[in-house]
Amino acid sequence: MDSRRVTIHRTTRETDISVTLDPDSAAEPAVSTGVPFFDHMLASMSFHGGFALSVKGTGDLEVDPHHLVEDVGLVLGQALTGVLEKGPVARFGHAVVPMDEALSEVTIDVCGRPTLVLNAAFPQPRAGTFDLSLLREFFGGLSSAARISLHVDVRRGENAHHMAECAFKALGRALKGAYAPDRREMSTKGRIG
Image 1 (cartoon, rainbow, N blue to C red):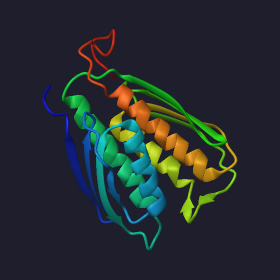
Image 2 (image 1 turned 60 degrees about the horizontal axis):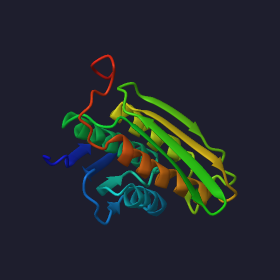
Image 3 (image 1 turned 180 degrees about the horizontal axis):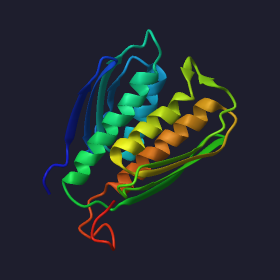
Image 4 (image 1 turned 90 degrees about the horizontal axis):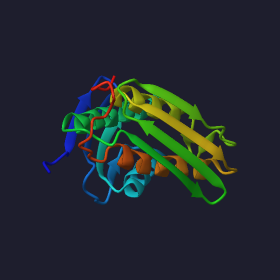
């Protein structure tokens, strides 16, 4: 099988993001955005998804991490689109992952129709200094740029850190399943979208 490794670089006035994704190779995640909690989430997603991920990002953090978090989602989504362009994938991915008292479920359809459904009621608004409302921006950017239907259900939990982390672990596993190579047609229509 030819390599499905993809590198995307995106620069704006607000951010400079580079993502390398290899869905067929497990490697130690290399994530550096200047936002420690977000780095921890992305590394956990890659590790538990069993795929190689490198993310290097800088942005106007003196203003707010919003632009950086959203743009990483966009660039990761573009990388997933690059993987899809290299051949058909399994299309559907699903994972339910616990972390202590928390439980999260992620379901993906690589369908060409960007949709985000996020159900998460975090009992604390922050994990450390990270504003958890920014996770909607990341998931939204990801689903939009990858053109996937992404359902993230944080079913329960008492610790917001645990809830977010098990969601990212489930996202990694669901991505691994959805983007597994598959020679079958991806849709009865003969195309997605």
